[in-house]
Amino acid sequence: MPAIIVVDAFWGDSGKGKVTAHLARRLDAALAVRAGVGTNAGASFTLDDGTLVKQRQLPTAWVNPRTRLAVGPGVLVDPAILADELQRFGVADRTMVDPRCGIITTDDLAEDAADPFLRKVVGTSGSGVGPARARYVNRKAQQVRELTEFTGLCGDVALEANTRSAAGEVVLIESAQGTQLSLSLSFEYPCTTVKNCTSAAAIDDVGLSWRQVGEVVLVVKALPTRVGEGPLPHEMTHEEAVRRGIAEYGVNTGRPRRKATQIDADLLRYATMVNGPTQIALTFADHIDPAVKGVRSPEGLTAEVRRVIDEVERITGCPVTMVDTGPLLNDIVDL
Ligand code: IMP
Ligand code: MG
Image (cartoon, rainbow, N blue to C red; front, side, top):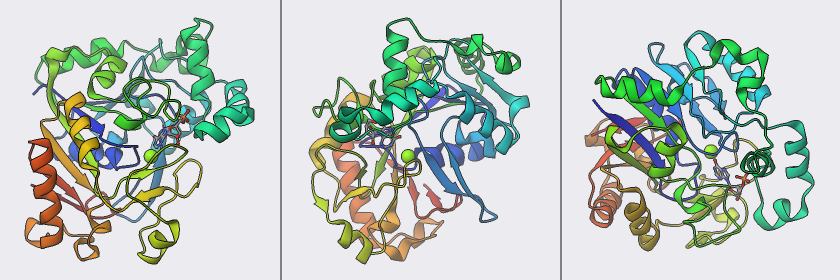
């Protein structure tokens, strides 16, 4: 079975991590590889036993003990965050990090936090990815291969992903951020992240051949959100989000997420065009109708949610195959 790419249609924070974790268990994936910029990502979900998990560096597929984990060569690594997640999830014996990954240093963190342009105009996550990537592009960065503490984890992730996929094993590629945050494909520069966040960018982050791509899952957040600066069509006030009980806060920064009242059809059409999805995961469906919260079978989906599913299928021309209904890993209708 060739590789499955999971990407986000809008501004991230859509539950890509949860969708990937679900697929890892459902398909008993052999390998999951993190793509995307770096530790500006923040995924959160709740395990079946009620434990809230937050993570920024490793693939969320660690929840399946049989899935091997990897970080693609295009992804920036923060050594402290990598070390913390390896230890917290107890996965060092099944994790591979590409030696070519660029390093985020404490200087990068300080520069991201101190730069008034990055802080106020872009509203970055403060995780140092901009300064680190600029240095990497200038060929002045350190790579993971230079860090002795990770020697045992180093391996060619591109080789691993292509070989396993070509052998018919299930390989998941978990991207990060979202299409509308793409550096050159967004129309909102400079309110973007530091590279593209599309399906093509994700396979490039890993070094996976396009011939190995079997499915592209586009994650569509039912009520899209945005953290940081830049336009958000159909934005609701934070007070309204609080009143409706659907206010969200950033995993990394705790910033309130700006929230929209609906999906923007033009942006979804554009995201479909540039990502070429084969299926859709509709996430945060309980934010459009609280009656579906925690629902796990199709009969529990309400008319209001079905209307949005029909609309998303009409715009994208793809089937909605998963509907996320709450924070628990198992709060999902797998169609
Ligand atoms: P940076 O990627 O930290 O430099 O931030 C640039 C812009 O992208 C800011 O608006 C961030 O809030 C946004 N951003 C970066 N990564 C993510 C993410 O994983 N989820 C949501 N927003 C993100
Ligand atoms: Mg996030």
